[in-house]
Structures are given as structure tokens and as C-alpha cells.
Length: 337
Image (cartoon, rainbow, N blue to C red; front, side, top):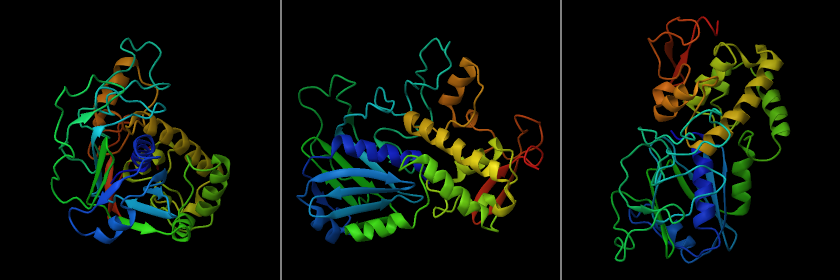
């Protein structure tokens, strides 16, 4: 399931390529025909993300709410302007110049490729092979005089297509895709926990700390509760807890306040790195060579996630994996005892 950094990147991509433009909306699959009809011909006014949910504001006081869930993804085609505040290069968001996160003596400036295609420019969400050709107008010379078919052919089960004269966005497999009124959108936001990139992070820290410290639920489950904190998924949950050396089974109310606050502040930092690079980089203190290796491979950029049966990178104890509310929980029983 895409975690918070991916959804923020999607929102920024929409803000750059759709805000201020009238869109043709359709539902090739037919499952969102009524909603698409409401949006068709309207101007996109803004795009924003809160945790794992994205909201597109349209003229006429309508909002499109999308939650990708486990299988959802946005596929983009056409001319794509990249957000200058996040890294991008040569058609893939995983191939980037990691501003502010590359070791100073990295000889290549940090330009590395994520072989797994995490957060591809053409398809963001559930992993899938890119189906469309993309022209990044700020990065490449274009597609030649003739160019590709426009609009691109519909491939597969497209729930919603949003189309301008230059850019196409196809939504497939979302958990939620609905049109909301302003009141409905605000009611959705009210149910979500704080997001470090939305509002004042200091206020978010207070909300998060208070929510965790009053609950008997384990901290491992609380970090996945989107009403407690927005955007954290399985990867960030495992990594945040390891970085805090916190046992995932400890009740929230029993976790020391300074540890809870430390987890929030770490989430602030990791989310910003994820949005900028498109990759969930959670290891630090790496040499330039180690950094390049980690940015190129998911297996080399995490402390415990997806390392069941392997030795802990710190103490050598075997990393364990458990089922927690239907999701896999990775942790070190020694470092996080």
C-alpha cells in the first residue's frame, strides 16, 4: 500500500499538471460514471494530500477524494511538469538528485536508480509495469514530431480518467474514489490524525503524543491507525519503531513521553526525505557507496523491514516477523526488547 510520501508526491504532480486547467473526466470502466460526469468540464483548483488520502478541489465546490489502498495506482501520460521542490530525472522519480540527503563526498552527486521502480513517474501506487510513454517537458527533448497516440488508449480497468490537452491521469484499483461536498471533505479530514506536512508540525506532535499516551493499544498498532497519525504504513511503522529502539507490543500509555515525541519528530524527518526522493530511505550514517547502494535497492535501505530471518544490522540477532492486525510486523527482539 502506498504510504504517505507517495500520496504527497501524487498531489504535487497533480498541482503542477492539472491545477488551473479544465479537465475531461470519464470512467472507462463505468464504475465511476456518475462521479466523472459531475467533474467533467470543471477546472481543477487545487490538490492536497493528508496521510494516505488525496483530495482534488474542483470549481463548483466539489472535491474528489481518492484512497489508493493496496491495489490502487495513478498512471500518467503525456507532458508532465515535475514539481521543482522534489527530485526527478530522466523519466523516473526513483532516479534522482537527493538534495540535502546525499553524503557530501558522493562523487556522482547522488544520481542513482531504484531498480524496483519505487514511485515511478509514470505509475505511482501499487507496483506495476509502466504502460504509457511519458514526456517530462522540463527534462527531455520530447517524443519527436509525430508523438504518441493522443489521448492514449485505455488499458485495463480504468476507474477514472482525467484529461487535459497535454496530460492524462488514469486511476486504477482504488479503495475509495468519490465526489464530496466541502462539508463531506472536512468531515473526512476531521477523522484523520496529524500529518507532518499539513499544518503546524508542533501542533501535530501534541495531538499525536496525547493520542498515543491515552491508549492501551500497542504502539505497533497505533502507528498504523490513521486516526492517530496519518501516512504511516508497514514500512515506516517497522523502521520508526526500530530507530526508536521501541518494543512494538508496548501499550501506547506505557511508552515514555520522550520516546513518543521522538517517534513523531523522526516521522517528520523521514516523511520529508520520502517526499523529496520518492524512496523510503530509513537508514542513516551511511558512507557514499553505501548510500548509493541503498538508494538503488529497497533491501539495502531499511533496518528491519523485509529482513525476517536475517541478522539485525546493529546487534546480529535474527529479525522476526509477526502478524499484527493482518499486517506483517518486523522487529529486532534484542534492540527493541
